Structures are given as structure tokens and as C-alpha cells.
Image (tube, rainbow, N blue to C red; front, side, top):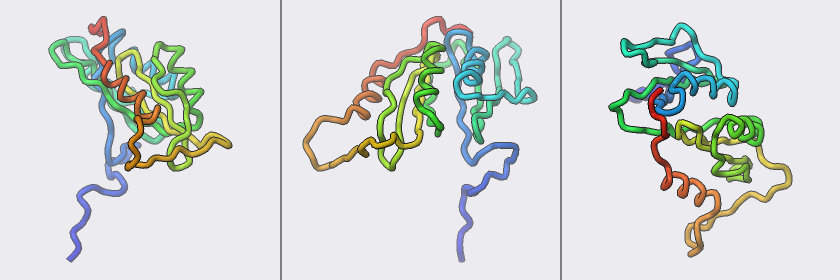
Length: 178
């Protein structure tokens, strides 16, 4: 007898929801509303108006932003909630253009677009709310694919070093009130 999978390979939630949907609790400049504007400007994200819900304290308790075929749920972090950055991966058509858009809106680039394993490219940035974004794009034409030898006694790659450095230095945003 075969046991059915616990996770459906195709979400039955419909309406653009995947089997897994990320949630970002936002602290920092302008709060969740400004973060949603950032998502629109950088990723062409579109908020679902009927999902927008404000709590009794005036903070956004739920919003949904469609980025490509995915849903990112957003909430204002309550004043007594611990800072928790979202760690988000997005497949994009042009890493450099997304980095340009993000930097123009206050993001800090931590990994410039670079060749990555599996004939793709990788870039990373930290947005003004201190969320960390991984961008995966198409391969860089004529760039050598990186190699990795787990048995070699070498220093970490620059790709690895940039994220380790960024995560060690990550702190809660200033001006945490939305």
C-alpha cells in the first residue's frame, strides 16, 4: 500500500498560493506599507487588496503580495515582537536590474551578480527592513561555472563569505516603529 504524500505537489489552495508561502514580519522605516511599496518597485509585486487587514492598533496584521507566481504574506511586527528577518529566494530574469532597483530604494548589495552552480547566476541584497534576498537568474554568458571541492583545505568562496559576513553583521533596523 502506498502512502499518499503529506505535501501536495500542486497546491489545492488555488488563487496563486504555492505549497509553501513565505511570511515577512516587518520592522523599520515606514513599516509593512513601505515594504509593500518596495516589493512593487523592485519585483513588480502586486498587493491583493482583499487580503489587506489592519489590526485594532493600526498596524497591518495581514497583507499578500504576488511576486511572479508566488505569494509573500506581510505583517507589521508588533512593538514587543523580536526582530526576525525574512530570508527570501527569488528566481529572476535579470539579477543586475533587480539589484539596481533595490539599491535605488535603500537596499545594501551583499553579493554582486556572480556565476553560480547549475548554470545560473546569484546575487544578494539586504533591504531597508533587514530582510535578506537571494536572487537566482540565468547563467552569465561565457562565465566559468564555479567549482567546489569539499575535501580541499581552502578558504571559503566569496559567494559563501558574503552571506556569512552579512548574517554576522545583521541587526534590527533603526526607526523600528512603522
